[in-house]
Length: 83
Image (cartoon, rainbow, N blue to C red; front, side, top):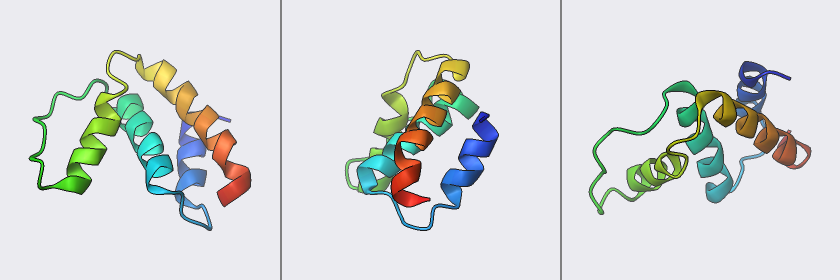
């Protein structure tokens, strides 16, 4: 399975992953598609944006290819539960 297929299948999950699982996917997706997070950190009052920013920043330094492989592995880990 390639990264784009995993991303499309993850979007089509019939059940929603937990917030932590969603953030795991989000951080790896952003790292795989954009690279290191260079955006300014959101303010503490914007809890959702801050959580997403932190999830992406957690993967800083990971190559885009490694992030794609990690995303596919994450998809395969959660697919039996949500697909």
